[in-house]
Image 1: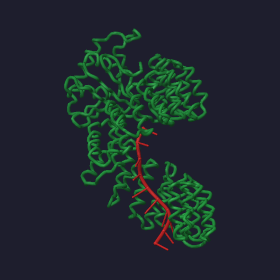
Image 2: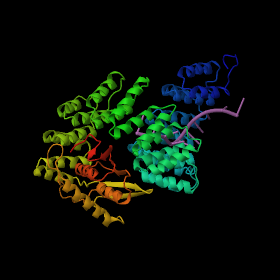
Image 3: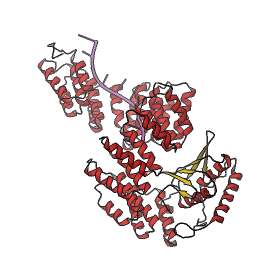
Image 4: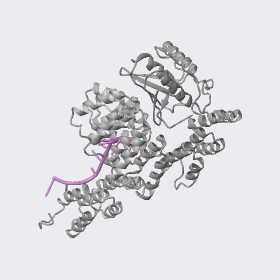
Length: 582
DNA sequence: GTAGGGTTAG
């Protein structure tokens, strides 16, 4: 327009500024600002608001504030709204909130847009009370029927970690929009409440609300968590017959779902078929290989990615480092940590170090692992010390285990897993005093063992078992089957690869028979010979169960796959694919 | 006639 000699005015500037803002071009924006001044439009409220919005979209909040300071007394609400949401979207929630206080002190009226600008700023549990205040304010002003605000408030509660409040609000909305459903579904998915996701999805189907890609990404993520491949497959069929089949987000979610349901072949096919892969696609498939202990395939793909010249990010390095540790590729893993820093200029975080500590620990290089922790440029978190503690268990180093334990309980005092780990280390070294000390500590802190559960999907139904479960209709048969297995397995007996006796080392267990055993016995009872068995456990499989399944797989000609909290264990003919040994 | 807003993958 300027090139053609036409002169913009107060009516046309907002349009021009808006398109410049959508391109996020600060230089062009600044030029336009000069034109605004030259052409005498600098006191037009519409132009000023558009200018502020443009500056905020270009991340130049300081410039936006300068414009705001010159705003005349008219149309103040809209100007405040613009700058408030600008601050919030640039992660300057406090500035936005101060501005809102100022607005109220000056007696400037606020409206729905003001609240919509502020609510997304409440993103951490610490902001929950502020978010609740905004919610109250919203109701007080009679804006509770504004669906956009309600959607936004749901997301706020989700981000602040309060799923109950999110759900309460959701249930009170009489006419929900698709975005309302999506906010709730993806909220549940992000918080790991997979069963709730599927429940809501069912409800949507019943009410004949058509899902979109956002809905299905949440549903697929829930399927991945639950190992619900059958539902995932149905979703895939729906996607294929709809206009969403080329959606990259959905394809990534499908790769992730199939990989986490144990179907790596299918995950790989979808990955290979993608014409335009994103970093997330690579991360999903590489992480999938890593979880299954296929470190070499993971590394191969990672190297292929590097050759294409795509810049890997921190998350991808987590996948590849964890793949190396699960497959025992110590040298390769250390190399990747090195190039991550030197070649890609990425700063390793705690999540990277915990993989590498695990990697060194498994290889028996405990001292190096400890030195690595000491050399970290970020504060080590619980997972880092926890990895060292796990390595001490493998290599029976009680002294270092105590050091790691003291650190880890300081950082995660309520994580029961670490107490159990140390107690098991003491058990192995016959340190009854130590065991007592840990138990006392747990009692003092009122810590109870998280209920471990396992499940097996059979004919589209999930059969869930907790330790010592007697609630299943087939309970009697399951325990009979288990007894038979245990008898056969202990008759088999024999020595492990270190030459030590491994028969029935299990201490008497107050929690009853472990859930994974019940799930496996159920699966053996109900499935045909020759089918593979996938059991999912929410916690990590314990050493005793691991060796039990290993021995069962020697006498029963099946592939047993156990997915636990961190990876897949494939058992066949008396061996396991994982790099662990107990 | 013009400006300010909500939900997505690891």
